[in-house]
Image 1 (cartoon, rainbow, N blue to C red):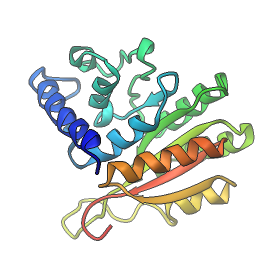
Image 2: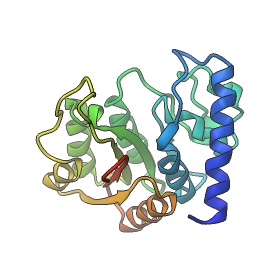
Image 3: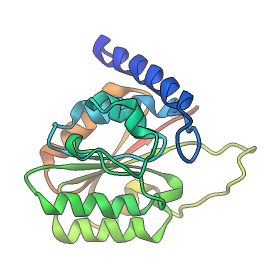
Image 4: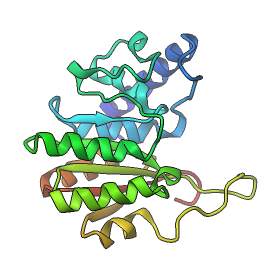
Length: 206
């Protein structure tokens, strides 16, 4: 990882601690191991591109210049900085991103998702709509391994990449612990045009 990206990961950790101290709604959700995914994704986005984070990733908005105090209420968003509000339904973020990308095809929208949201029907609807409209949206799905202590069983019958490809959407799997790998994957996705999906592998054995 380059020095610049490492500095951003460190800055993100400090912003995360500052946000937690402000008692954010609905409760503190540390960015944790998602930090390289957030940093890499934002590094590849232009200032005019929309960024659609989850509650965990929202602290990344500080890397776009958003004051940490603005992030206490996730429903506010930060329109001047092209940061969408974090919705109550994770999968609906994908549809929001498709809408934002379709509204201005000269710009991209990037949305962060997890396996839980990828198993929701709204995610499949978003993939289908993005493919139909050829919307310039990048779906970044972070995949955490579920060990024996996890309270959730298997949630998808296929990988997020396979689901995207079934809709005719190009997909790529990357090391989610490497911010540079994520940045490069998002850069390639933007250059390809249309919708793309990036599966960011996290945790042991990725």
